[in-house]
Image (cartoon, rainbow, N blue to C red; front, side):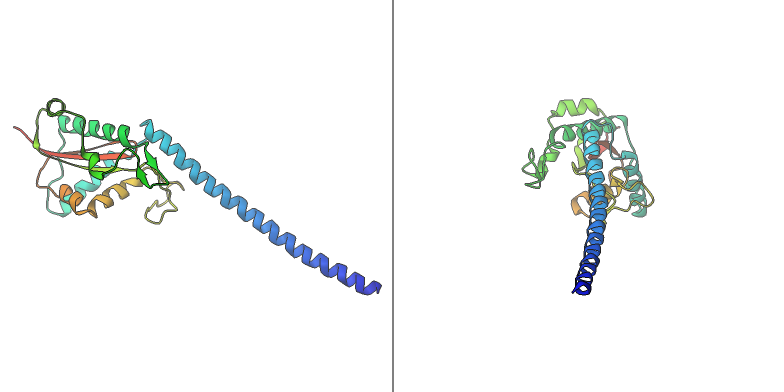
Length: 217
């Protein structure tokens, strides 16, 4: 009887040990998974805050470089900037960011301030005000591409190639998403490959704008 009791206790202890080991492994895995998710979420929220304050932005220079290389590959000259065109592009990036950047509704999966994506291309500037910003621009030929995001992605997103960069990669690697997004959209691609020779890219936070227009001599 005593031997049977000892065997029962030994067997119970053995199962208890296995249970505790599984529990410990689960707790450790949960800790690291939660920590990883928390760091990702924290990084996204921090970048959102910096974007809204325009203390951090998607690199307009890198986007411009990608566009220029793309145009060269397609037997076109790189876009040539003018001071007025860049002032207008910078204004438009700021205007779009102020109106739309903070209005993303995760439940509805849309920007609350924007019922139609074409609203992005509506400026509050009058024709006269636009011409003051860019006196040399022929606004009859002006066209723009706009990229906007209020949701910074991280390197765990398979569509982003972060290389050896920081784990989160939420800013510099977005230039690939901007450029590829435009190339893969026919209307945006047409702007990239426009015969118009003057263009300028500017960004504010998570908004990137490419403005092109013929220049009056």
